[in-house]
Length: 307
Image (tube, rainbow, N blue to C red; front, side, top):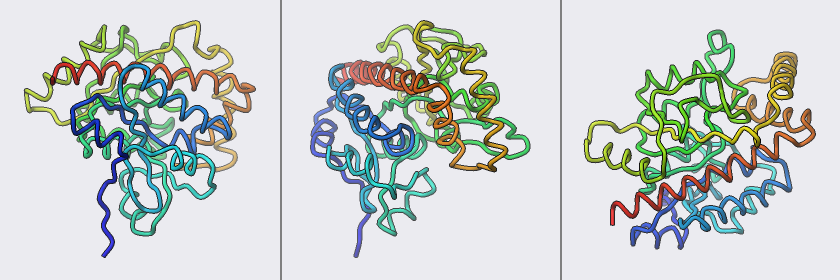
């Protein structure tokens, strides 16, 4: 009989056993979010950034139907280089496991798997959210509903700016997902430092985030996630005029070609990469590396509190 238990990489298993800090990382950015060959190089750089900040990286993905918490380099290379890698949200995990698929986990799936594995901090680039014109399409990322029931801290640069940040913040509030700005009271807009919306709360240090997580756990009242919105410095953002022009062009192209569902985000990100001649890719890489560093420092602070 086939079993479908989570498999932990050796380093991650050891770290969790002795209480060392661990940071979860998604694999969709490797297989679907970045172009080859940059994707594998950046995936390794993300893991190295987590290590340099004192934590253990746990990149999560599916290999031949088995969910792995802490892919080794060969497995990471496989997801970065083979063509038939499924994009897996939470609802897809069981089906993909049953048919023995290779799969890359989204923010939603990575959050769920990480929490099940006992990992409390997760670094990603931008959060999924409510799509533009969602009032007609009803297109909303499963990231939001998953975070409503998953006790994990997600360090991100806000919601992807190709989506609707205002509507996403409203949904996060309705779903009871906490949102704090890291050294800001403005919600970042992924490629842009300022996404155009205020936040109620901000935190000033990794230690303060760790204290928030400890309070949530000790209260025992809230099982949802915490979004830690970490903006790029203004000098590192994508030029706002270039961003707005590229987004308008991409949305028009999206409608013309009839792209829907899971294909929307990869389509628009690829358009940004092409239309900005790689400038958006450079910004995207800066985002995930900064978030990986902050997430690792939060994990270190949380482990110190628990010790």
